[in-house]
Structures are given as C-alpha cells and as structure tokens.
Length: 114
Length: 112
Image 1 (cartoon, rainbow over the protein chains, first blue to last red):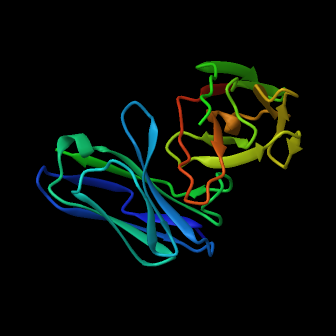
Image 2 (image 1 turned 135 degrees about the vertical axis):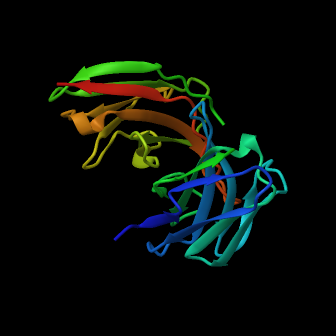
C-alpha cells in the first residue's frame, strides 16, 4: 500500500498544453509538498500545504497552480507548458510542517515537454 | 540556514561500514542536521536527524561532533541497495513552515 502516490509516473506533452499531476498520501500527514528535480539533479521546493492551506510558495511561475481539495491530496496543475518545465516532480508529505524530518516522498512524475 | 559541504562521491565495499562526512561549520544552536538519501529513480528517503547528541535507528547512526561543526552518517553494513545520493541538510525548525532544501549530496557507490 503506497504511502505517497503520484500519477502519472510519466508524462510527455507538447509545448503550450495544460497538464495536471495528482498526489495522494494515506499516512494521515497534515503537510504536503511539491518539489522539482531538474536535469542537474537539484531538488527544489515549489509549494507546501498544511491542512489544505498554502504555507510555502517559492518563486514559481504563475502557470503552476497547486490545489489541495483535502489534506490527503495535493495536485499540481501546469498551464501553457514550456520546454524548461521538463523535470521530475516529487510530491511529499510530513506529519509536522515545522520540522525537517520524516518527509515521505512519492516516486516522482517525469514530465517531458516537447 | 547553515551551508553544508559533502564529498561529491565515494565508494565503499559491501558489508563494510560506510562513513559519510558532512561539514556544517556555520551551524547555529537551533539548527538540526538531517540526512536523506535518493536511490536512483526514486524519491528521497528520510534516514535520520539530530541536534547535538548522537542518534541511531534501524537504518544508520549519526555522529555529531561536540562543536557541531561536522557530522558523520554511518551505514553499519553497507549493501548494494545502499547505493544512492546522500544528502546532509541543516535546517532550523520554523513554525511558519520548513523549506527542506537539498544540495548536491554525496553519490555513494557500494561495490561487491
């Protein structure tokens, strides 16, 4: 039973399209995150939600919009996809949004924009 | 946040202990040391964390020097499945939300 699950695992799409990535966690955690890992393998946080409330919003283009319908789900919608959006996107969750331990990550969504 | 310095890569022999160093000479008193790892094509995995005392769990041990300027993650009996990138992160606990930031990490290759 996967703790943090993301769908789809792979996503290939054309420039200009709109796409969504879904994330669900069954750990009962209060906080969820979206991270982006680029071609240089650096992981950067994009967003964080705590109990459905946005608490971290890094310098991310407005084309990226997270949505949390409940605390077990955090989806990422991307409008007008660009080549530079190609990356692996990881969803994560943690029980305590104040600490840095015990993050559980999903297996990632590899987005390729052509 | 304190900056961390880790070797870019290291090899270790299967069955032997793997000692992964991390330098965080500018760490402040309220900053914790966290270790995560990322196995190829997977999401990062939490390993262990500590403030000033040494810590041990089922995965690893964390040794923090008395001045807290450096730490070592010890994998007691490395297996091939421990091949991964290991990240040492120093971060203060913040009530407003914690941005766990991953640097370059150490690429560890466990060899048979």
